[in-house]
Image (cartoon, rainbow, N blue to C red):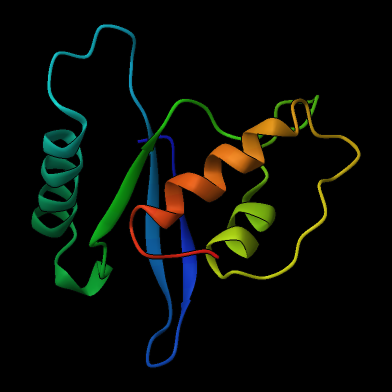
Length: 108
């Protein structure tokens, strides 16, 4: 898993959402990988981690310097307005992230 960021939750404050970038040639189905990942986190860390959802993405939004745009991804998941930072490497990735979080019930 490449990253996990919080999404606003009325009771808990935030709950984690995972964004998974698969290695080339991954043989398992993406949904199976997500299920295994959630189970692994719950086994290793325990239910206190509250990690229940992840989505497979082709790539993560990064700056030209290689930093992942976690704050922007959090705003997308929270359905907040966001502005693509001027340092973003490829702004089209943000649309891909927005579509991906919709598949797990977040975003606009």
